[in-house]
Image 1 (cartoon, each protein chain N blue to C red):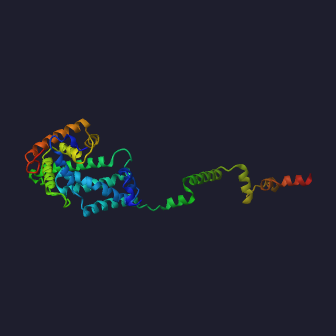
Image 2 (image 1 turned 90 degrees about the vertical axis):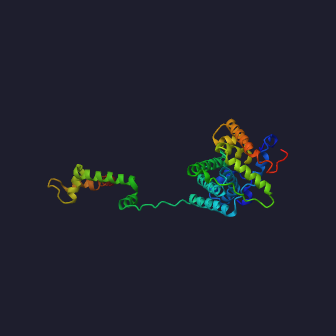
Image 3 (image 1 turned 30 degrees about the horizontal axis):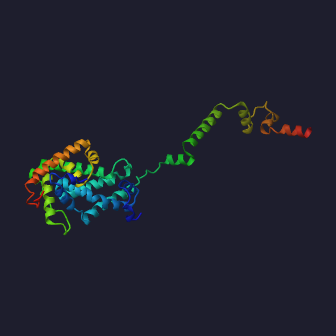
Length: 129
Length: 192
């Protein structure tokens, strides 16, 4: 690599001298380099964790009930409840009326019994048959 | 992995180990690469203190890039030589813009007692001659004839073609020979 065979200009002895007198890094300098290496390595291997922000009240509630999917289920149930309240099916309103004691005079007890215990007639049929 | 076991491990494999938190890899890379980086910086700048600053900065950049290093794509030393060359170019540019007379005289590098004064004198003469070359010629000559790299690697470091490397080293050597011609006798070259 050093072209000794082509040393027509007589420079090879100068290059040899330069190689033989290469500046040696002293111990203090080597220690400085190694300090750098270890401190960069320490930073890279264990990067400081960024401070995490504490969750707010709403976020904690949301996480407590199971996150957004649970919230959509809850919202659907609420809407259904409101809808039934505003526009109840006839059977529900009759049953509710009997429960709270505001049934009309034309409605007798046997009319609504089948709603309370749909098995009753079946039971009778079974005992009769 | 014990330190001794790392002498056979390639530079880029060591760098991956380093990125994974292996302290022995940090020590092995420091021991292996720092002398090369410092030597190259010294030959480019001719000043020990500045060369140490550049070497430290280049090594720091290596530590920082370790986690993103893609094994097998480039040689670690090629990357380092390029970083050193860029840092040296910045320093030389600042030097020129500040004061042309502030270029330091080559210093006596730390050498063992067994190395003769004549070797030191020759190395100093070469360093002075190198300092007088244009930066790109100096870089090519140092990489080729002192660091002992091949033209393809130098081409990669300097981001030029291998033919351009040949041209730079040839012109650089011619200029060095001219500068050093007058000092051959003084430096103990009677025969060649």
